[in-house]
Structures are given as structure tokens and as C-alpha cells.
Length: 306
Image 1 (tube, rainbow, N blue to C red):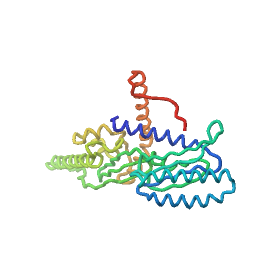
Image 2 (cartoon, rainbow, N blue to C red):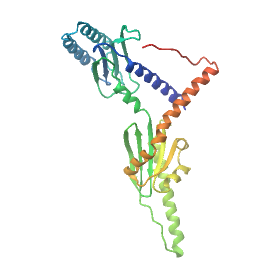
Image 3 (cartoon, rainbow, N blue to C red):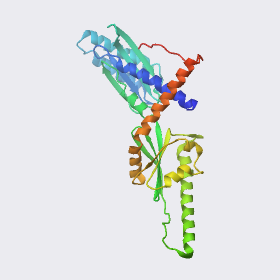
């Protein structure tokens, strides 16, 4: 695992820990505000929305709940005004009165830029914080590459969370096997082998264009799929970039090519794809305990109270 990947996993772990704390927090009444803004969202628009919400809150019958809601709205507006614009990944603010373990109320406010871009706005006032929009972003973290190859053509695609994308596909016209004997049989066989070799080489070259960017592989892993032996030839081909070979997670047999083969390959690879993140987190945990055992000073631990 590279340092960049390791740092990324640490950041994801921090966000998951924060979201878990936010999810477990509870309050009395409906004074807990969850506000999530996408990148580029006008701060003034959000402030005005909260101003209108403040006017509505004055009609709440319960005096205690009314005051808590109004205080939370003002605190959220104050935190919003610290930003001139929504950051590149968006902005998340959680504010309100939460009940501590000993039953007392505690005012709480936090704002942060999400780990990945948010593409929708959320405003909710409840007795708990709503983090679903941020959780969905974390679920879409890992991206896997697929190469579906047979004697008719090849498809390059990616899978990230539940989002499937076709990057590129093309067809090929390869000569069939000839049953004829005689003086032309050797020549036909040689031409057929040459066309197959050129086809595999072309796919290997395209794989670099599809899955390597800025001199590094842009996918967590690669799945090879196909109904013929081409996928195995590609995996063993000298023309296939060694960096991509190291990322091959599984080679699967599918009944179809193209998009149908892509869908089938996803189904057949479900287990290995789910294990990748588990293995990465396991390695990260092992590295943490190694630092502790070596007393390197590159670790910390303790309790964080939300």
C-alpha cells in the first residue's frame, strides 16, 4: 500500500469515526440541525433559508424546545458566516443541544469539509443528526476496473459502489479456424495467430490508457473476464503493463461479452471486491500495532468524547 493510499485510508477512518459519533448523538425536542451544502452553494442563500426557519421556529409551542431550536439556528448561521463560499467538496454543519451520558444537555457545533465532493444539499431539524448523505460518499470510495474480452470484442469499465461506467468498447473481426488441409493450412494458421496476437496487444495498450493516469493505476484492482481464453492470454501477455498485472484480483469466465458480460463479471466478483477494503484496513491496523510494539512514537490512542 502506497503512502498516499495509507493517508487516504486514515482520513476515511477519521470521518467514519466522526460520523459514528454524530449518528449516536441524541437530543430533546427537534433542536439538532444537520446542514450539508454542495460545492459552490451560495452561503447567503443558506443564511436566508435559516432566517426563514428562525421565523417559523417562533411558533413552536414548547418554550424550552423553541428556545433550543432558535439558539441552534443562530449558532448554525454564525458558523456559516465564517465561510465566504462553500469549499470544493462542500460543507457540513451539525449543531444543536445533545444529551450527555449523565442526562445533561450540552451545546454542540461542528463544521467540516467532506472527504469527497457532495452533490446535493440537505437541511434537517430533528432529535438526531442525519449523516446519510456523507455515508453514501464513503461507500463510493473504491473504484475497480473491468476488462471483458472475447473473440468478438472488448469492453473496459469501472465499478464504484453501485455505479457502473463503460469507459470504452470495440469489436474485432478475427479469422475462424479452418478445417482445410493442404498447402494453405499453415498459412491460414499463421495469419490467425498473428491477428490474435495483434488483438491482445491492442487490448494491453488500451488498458494502460484506461487504468493508468499520472503514472499510477487509478483503480483499486482489475477484474479480467471473458468467454474464451483471451482473458488468460492478456493476463500473461508481456505487453500488459506490470503495474496492471499486480492489480489483477480475479479472472472469471462469463457466458457473454460486452455489457451483459460486464454485469455477469460484477456478480461473479462480488466477494473478492468486498474483501479488498477489508484487507487494506487489516494491513493498516497491523501497521498501527507494529508502531506500538516498536515504540516508534508514530501513534496515539485514547478516548474522544463527542
